[in-house]
Amino acid sequence: MENLALVFTELNRMEVKSIAVPEPVRNQVLIRVKACGICGTDLHILKGSYDSSIPLVPGHECSGEIVALGPDVVSRRVGDRVVVDPNIECGHCEFCKAGRVHLCRNLKPFGVFRDGGFEQYAVIEETHALPMPDNMTFLQGALVEPVSCCIRGSQMARFKLGDSVLIHGAGAIGLLNMQIARNCGCAVIGVSDPIPARREKALELGADFVIDPIQQDLMGIVHRYCPDGPDVVMECAGKTKLVEEAVMQVKRGGIVVAFGCCPPGEYARISPDYINNNEITICGSFNNPVTSQTAITEIASGRVNADAVVSHRFSLEDAEKAFAAFGTPDSLKIVIEP
Ligand SMILES: [Zn+2]
Ligand SMILES: [Zn+2]
Image 1 (tube, protein in one colour):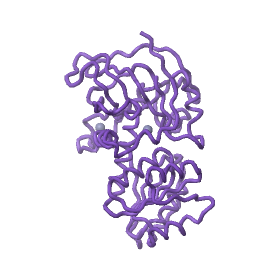
Image 2: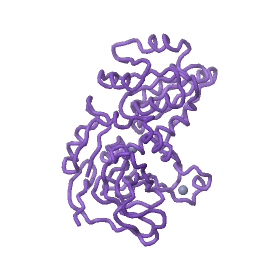
Image 3: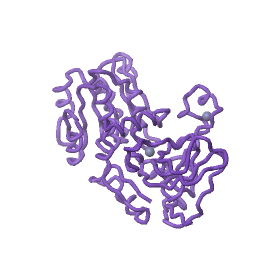
Image 4: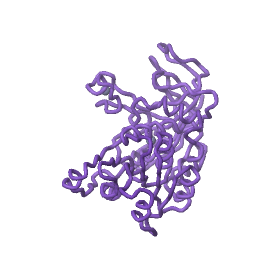
């Protein structure tokens, strides 16, 4: 059996080549991968700015069909259509014991510290192979991981009925966070992005207003919709400067969520006095602790339109082209179908 794979062979080098089909051991299942999305994390891994272990088959936003079982598997069958929850927690550290598995001290994510989904055959523990509803496509399955991260974001943002929200960045993640904010009952949602096509997409998917932060007076427009500022500002563009600005944009008593992956080593200048006097909360949102099932439900029910944030689909042979397309102005989520 051939297993075509995209391999990060060393820093800044990738290669599509045939490698051995992995053997499912213990409670692992072997998956014939059907779809796997490219994430900003994959590029950070390639450049060496994200902790990982290279050589590596990256890819952690993955769906597929089970084709073989390890000897101890009890809960899955050959033929099951599944999505991968990539975050393999250790189960015995202080954080795992407290149910905060995403903060596990010994997290060994699929596609980061062990081979992931940019290959035809991948192995994953049965506990992290989650069944997909019949009406969910493999393409949608590849969006479960990013959506589950956004659901974590909504928990950190404490979205509630009637909230006003400003989202910086209308890439795939900004657009998903926007839809989830709406589903949580937020009433007024604005999205800021310098790229016209992305603003267009945000309006299509239900933004109340969009802003070109380069050409327009961002806060002038925001104040038309929410005079005291938004209850929540979410940074989804990965720009340190925007987190800094968000602190000054959010309503008194509001919440700033640093969601985007900003460059490591950069720092934002914020005034503790201002945060104190205005009771601002600044928080992060990391991974997807036990939100995968909700993500599956949200996508399968159509409440989150996952298809709308997919801009490109590539075969595994064209994986290098897929990575080249990442981050270009007309790109949103790029999915490889091995
Ligand atoms: Zn990701
Ligand atoms: Zn742990």
